[in-house]
Every structure is written in structure tokens, then in C-alpha cells.
Image (spheres, rainbow, N blue to C red):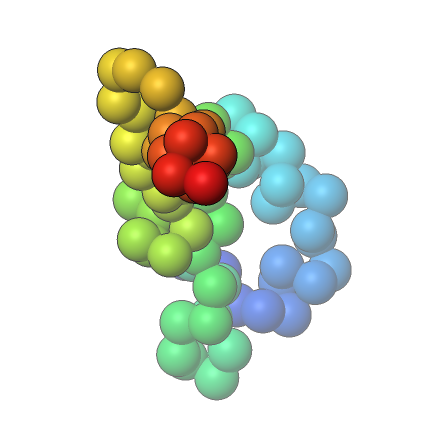
Amino acid sequence: MKTIAFTVFRKNASGVLDLVEQGESIRVLRHGKPIAKIVPAGRTEAQPAWKRPGLRLVAAGAALSKAVLEERRSSR
């Protein structure tokens, strides 16, 4: 992973993004502290749980809502 200063990134953003497009990861520093990590779009890191799609529960048979409505009709 390459490390560059923010001012270098700002002046050469197109060239830096070309490197990222070729598969290079770039860490950007401001005043010596890391502020960003730029990685190619194909290499995603693990998503936090709140961004992942939820589980879908599927059960065989009639839908619960239909079963409840039919039960209500039959009990009248």
C-alpha cells in the first residue's frame, strides 16, 4: 500500500486514481495522520452488519396473514 500526503493527492488526484484503478491501494495522510484509504472498487472490505441485507424467512404453506383472515371468516 502506498502512502501519500493530502496535498500530493489533491494536486495529482487523476494520477492517483489511475493507480487505484490498476489495483494499488493508497493511504492519504494529512499532517502525518491517516485520513483516508482508497482501494479499488472490486476489492471491498467487509460491510458492517447494518449495511448487509436482512435475512428473509420462508416457510412452506399458506402465508400467515391469509391463515389469520381465513380463521376470522370461519369463526363468524
